[in-house]
Every structure is written in C-alpha cells, then in structure tokens.
View (cartoon, one colour):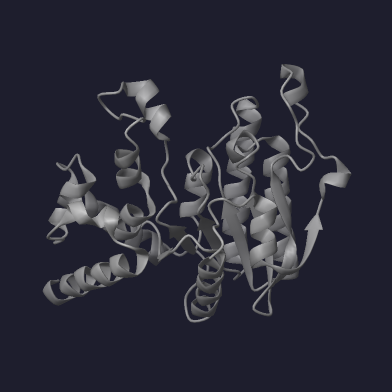
Length: 299
C-alpha cells in the first residue's frame, strides 16, 4: 500500500495519472501578488498542480491542491488556475475532471481576492457539469477539505473519501474560536473525526465512495466513478437539487436533537456505534450496506 494521506500533491498526481502534462508549471513562476506584501513565503505553483493526463486510458483534466503550502488555501492565482483548468475542460471535453482537494478554505492573507476566486471556481465547476463532463473530487489529505473548497466539493458529481479524510464547511478551530470550546473542542481528535471524517460523511450521504488510504484504492474508485457517470445525469438538474433538499430536510427531522455523531449512528440502526472507529474500511462498508438495505426494506 502507498499512503495517499502522506503524499504531496505532485506525488498523488504521479500515482494516479499517466502521461501527465502540467499547465503553468513552477518554471512559469506564477506566484501570488499579495503574499510578498505581508512578507509571507510564495510557491511557484501557488499551491496547486493542474494539467491533463489519463487514468486507465481515459483522458482527464486534473487539479491537485498542495496541503503543505498554506494548508492548500485558495488565493487569487490558486483560484485562477483552477478556473482556467475548468474552462479548458469545457472546450476540450475530457472524460472527467478530477479534483484532488486538500484545503483549509480561503487564504486569509488574500481575503476578498480569495473569496472571489472560490465563487469563480464554483461557477466554472457547474459549467463543466453543464457541458456533460463529470466532476470527481478526491479527499484524503491530512488538512481535509473545508471552507470554500468544502462547498466546491459538494457541487461535484462524486466525492471519494478515505476514513482519514475530513469534509466540512467550518473547520474545528474556526468553530471553537467563534463559539468557544464548549461548542467544539478542536483538541478532541476523536470528536473531530467522528464529526467531519470520512465514515460519518459516508453514512450521512455527503460522500458517495469510501476507500482505504491507498493510492491504488483511490485510483480504482475514480475509474469506477467515471464508468458509472456514463449511465447517470452529469449536469446539475432541478430534480437533483430537489432530491438533495429532501435528503437535508429528512436529516434535520431525524437528527436535529442529536449533538453527538454516535447518537446519529445509533438512530440509523447501528447497534454498537462505539465500534465504528475500529472497523477497517471493508468491514465498515459491509455494515453500511446492511443499514441501507434495512432502510430500503422499511421505507
């Protein structure tokens, strides 16, 4: 096994993508115009690798955020590279757009520029889907996927996560800073992963595929997602929005009074929710499948 969690953005691209051609590589020195004004370090790729290549013989456009540079946070150039890649995808029609997301959200150093960049990324992603190109988001880095990129990810066709991955709007530290440690203790790592981790997101329906922390497992899942997209509706539709709203409404009705993820799991019919954390990926997926089957039989 080769850990996706421990890899850099470029190592992930090398492990997943064949015949990769990078757009705007570090030699072009496209750096943030804002960071030097704050005496902050820059990166010659501004924390994101973009380009095209193939997965299992299928052409894809790919972006990989580098969590090692400012936590993968989005700034003006970072966002512009993502938008440019997505606009190129609309023109050249690859078989999928794959986003290897790892980001704490908007780069605070760039404030409004970063917020505008995320809004442009959202619009560009929806244009990719409208062009009939599936968008597949992979989340498995140690920084998770939060803030604006958390919203971007939920606009994709498919999200693939590992147990170690995290996905949410606000990060634990942000919630604690805004509302106090009584609301959310960011130092309680078990609580953090129960609340934002891959298993919880999978059970709630926020991600469609859960895999082990292994490059090969992620690659297999991406190929499967591409194959399944051929039979599904790629563009965002009113019916899909209504189905999502129905799911969120049901979630509020069923779990609004639950403050602990394990209480939610128990309400779903999991007899021993305290054991979830100790299950490996295969055992967890078997348990999840049995729960979903029981839901279909009773509903």
